[in-house]
Structure formats: structure tokens, C-alpha cells
Image (cartoon, rainbow, N blue to C red):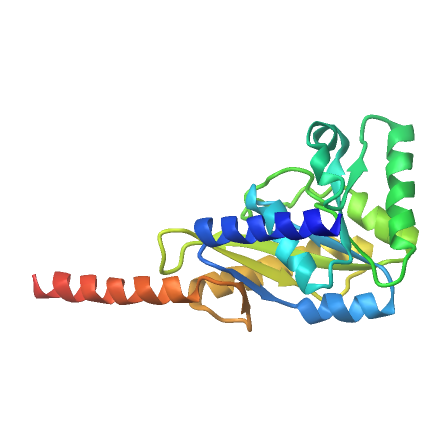
Length: 227
């Protein structure tokens, strides 16, 4: 499993470097601190196909102690995600959901472990309000007494022809305040994309390519100005 995870993780980083202008993150200290005290449920917004890819470098940064809840039907079709850390989320009925909660709870019973749960359940534009959250993330956090952390994910164009990925991990919230926490973290990602503010650090590449395109943009502006 570890060898497969390492190989797939390297592939993911290669894909990210080819398709995104870097991954920028803030708030890893919130997750690491919470994981020192007990289990953690990380609840990211679900914006893009890229979201699942981002979980690999994020999990690396957190010590590879995470699993992700994945729709059971999709997991059955793509079973190779199992050894990569996916746990089935069976929403076909009450009994399936109970099995899913038991398996997730069993994983979270270990020290310093994390479970990623996309509470929106499907890809949703980051600007859409309300966020239309499903109760799964809040429920499993409450059921296992895990710390619940909101995670805002956004993508936006800065100074490159491909978008940057921006991840903001917030401080712990009570389950009933998850949406408010997510809105706060999304606002932070928007500020970063607009003006680079907010204490985000690069997790994966992109800085050199951004510099190249920034120089090209300045040259184009000078050329247009002279015209």
C-alpha cells in the first residue's frame, strides 16, 4: 500500500505541476495541532475535479494519516482508490449509511487520524450560496467527538494561463457552525486570488512559472503602451 501510495502521489504532483499554477495553502497548523490532540474531520468545499487530487499533497503535509469518504458506487467502479485511503460512503439506505459511519468511526478511533469529507456531496461553484451542505461531516465529527475543521478550496487565474489552487484550513468549529466556517475560509481564498493577501504559502510549485508570465505580461504592457 505504501509503495502504491508513493507512486500515485508522485503522479498526482506531476499532474498538478502540469495543470495548475501551484497550490497555495494556509492553516496547516490548525490541522496538525488538532491531530496531536485526537481525531480530526476535515470538511472541504467541492469545486472541481482537481479537489480529490489536492488531498494527496495535503495528506502528505499532514503525515499521511488521512482517509477520504468516497461515494460507494464510484469506489466500486474505481476500486484502486481503496488502497489509496478511500472509505465507502453508502447513501443507498439506512443500513449502508450505518456501515459507512461504523467504518469511518473505526478509522477515527486511532490517535492522530483524519477523515476528509466533502459536505456538499458534489461539485458546486464556489460562489453559490447557500453552500447546500449535507450533514455527513458534521454528523461523523459529532459521533466520534472528532475536531471539525472547515476547508475552503478555490481556483483562480493570477499571472499564468492556468489557475492556481488555493486551500484555506480554518480553526475548529462546532458542527452546527460548519457553513459559517467554510464561508470565512472561502473569503480568505478570494482575497488571496484578488491581491495575494492572507499568509498563504506554496505547497507545490508554480512560483517560477508565475514569475516568467509576470515578466511576459510587463513586456506586453510596455509594447502596447508604446503603440
